[in-house]
Length: 89
Length: 403
Image (tube, rainbow over all chains, first blue to last red; front, side, top):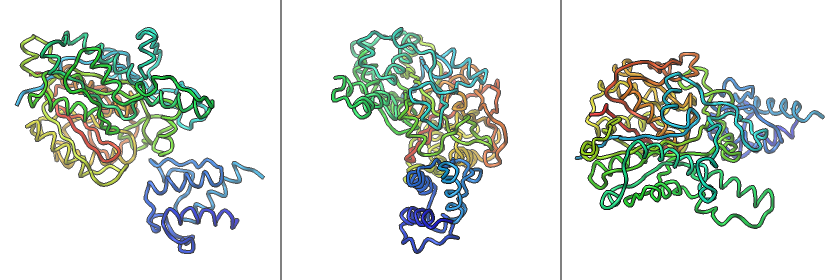
């Protein structure tokens, strides 16, 4: 996991949750952090803008999405995969 | 209090360019949703919608009119023209001052905004057409209807997102019932299928990319539509005196706010509004045979709506029919309640219940009779039309068979 991706995602989530980045733990769920469905959609938008990627996510079926949002670590891994796929080095 | 009846209707939407073709499509369970045909569609991730096709405004309006009429105004005037031809009314003297028009739209002249922003921002032009403002304003359609038919009483537009048309028709009903007006043209219109209009909805991530499947376990979001429907609401005695054909009676209306969340619906708010409409109509729960659902096809709306209906109706919830015609014409946003009113009239007048098409898998959280996929013949004497908008604004109308 690259530190750069991880740190930028934590910064986005921290801002959404109104927390210090240090308080966003990798095993936390969005629910733990107090991020609701609107906050999630806003976070995904911020991630798309930050990494210039398209995140496949439909709020009607969050569980069926290829984008795993079950924890902060899962989101970081999913974003890394999307960056690798959409911006191959 | 006076009784209020519907004596005429008109429409244009993805299912048809008038009422007979729309009702035929609803009876056949035909889908009006398909690939979007609009500029820059390749830059959209949602590429389907309930678009009005084979539309030729030049055949219906002159050049001068088109300069002033945004697409949502054109749709309104087409629907009003059909309704007024059926009503056989003309407005002059005291009747003109005691008659008006109240219409719903959420976005108003969205295409006009879109085209002119494109012109100044993308193309760098420093000049726009002089009529941009009178063309895009939300009240343009209501104003043009009032001018076309000499309606000199109350004329205004209601914007309550997806409940706009129901709020508009509810207010028209109240104005006639109270004695303030004798005849009201009412309903609503939306023409949000432009690049910017669809792009905005895309952002919320609640849109389906393939189909609108209300109440189906595999539903994955809403699909936008466009069009209009306009009705003539009339004092019952006035209609009877002139021997007008009565399509249905508007018996009650309730509106309420969830005062809770800007996008998530509330079961309590929906249930309170449904109960309010029944009470206002003096309608017993077991009278209701059909509900035209808000039924957007989103995960959140459909389960909350079904839970609210189950709460209000108790055991009778299992006996009534509830369908979402959005599966066929799409979600017309501010115009949706108006087009859905056509399904309510069809149920009462023709004994045909419009289906929820695209229904594939039962959802235990929507365990009601949703009239899946095929229209049904059934005699019903009372129906409801639900609208639960973003912003937590709810509006429910109660109708009965023509007296």
